[in-house]
Image (cartoon, rainbow, N blue to C red; front, side):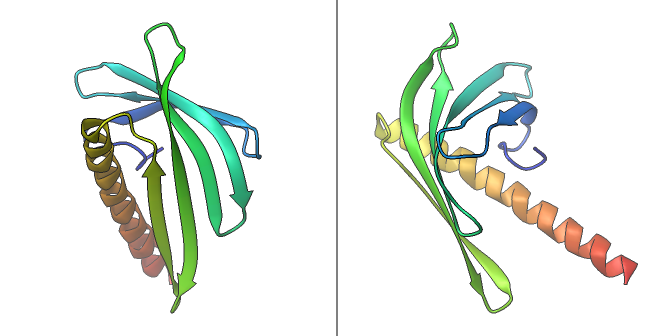
Length: 125
């Protein structure tokens, strides 16, 4: 929850049933206080290397909007982990570009979290 939203946003709610067919749902709050709800269904879980799930922003009445498919692949390489992220099925180029910006900021936040965890770990040795 600390990294899974763009800069300035916070994740105020996150739940999921982590199994194929299980649902997930989350809420991101903007710096201005607007809430954005999203969710989907886990399609494939192959531990520890692959996660596939649907992603849809909720419409105002709570019904899912246009659905995309997200595939995350993790591969061990020389003592590190390579993460490959792929999202398909966008309704428009604008939607694709908006997601690219949001995910890029989220991954920047993930890198910061990992760096902090390394520093904390190294300080305890």
